[in-house]
Length: 382
Image (cartoon, rainbow, N blue to C red):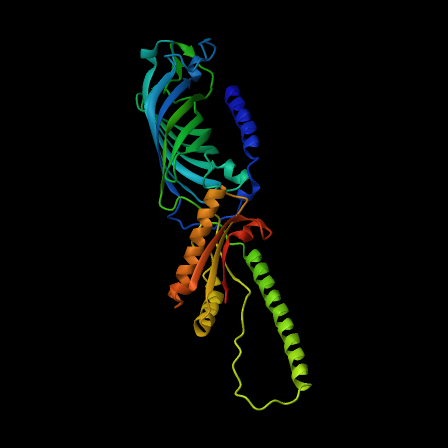
């Protein structure tokens, strides 16, 4: 048990250093449906048994001794309810050892162990969710039932351990599972062993498992849109329009005064004056995505497209990414795709493709906070 606690302490130190990740990668997520974020696991297992029957016998405690070790497998099905909290149902079956003597053949048993275990992904709970994180540190604890098939006995069993997963792809991860199991003293089905009256104690075993996790269905979590940030940016656009309107009114007053002080010219046919709109309209995207985060952003784009069609104006679509995440080449490609995505929407709205030009600025930090820069803008160029 002391060795297991030492392993936990060392793992905690490693987790503390891991917490120094880029804080811009932290973000809250939207809860997925019940059928999302399920997973399957399969592992090969190595087990070291420690029996209450060996008490006071002075047997070697090494987990590598042949009279202790067993080999088998485990399978599990589980679900993550949030990026940090999940459940799994786990089944182990293998050859085991009762550890009555140091004779491996005498000790042989067959058993299975079925448990329900709660999972806590401390990497996501402490460092924030990051779908591309390579290493996830996941302590767990559980309860269940174990059966000694050789002696036809059953015992309640509890467990605690650490599941480490190493990301291979969105769907696949490598498992390294270290566990400790504790059950009642009748697991071997013997009150006396070899003529010795045994003190009440618990049977226990340690497991080291290696295998794979297969993520099913929706395996990631979507970011919650930053509504406050979008509102703040929309308000800044409104303020800019108000300022332009005030300037336009002032210019109109100046022109009226000039006309009032000039001789009246001969009547001419009045000509319509087209109002020229220069303020860009923004469309926002989630982190590393090219799908528009809020379709209501297209309402303002629709109005601008209608104006451009009626007045034969050209439109410029500019794509951006935030410079705090991703490499420069990746952000350049991402900003190009965002501009293309909005340009496609303009074509659907009836704007001729020949009147739409596109450009990409890559990763920028024009706006603050940095997440505001995950956008594309649309504006009239002439």
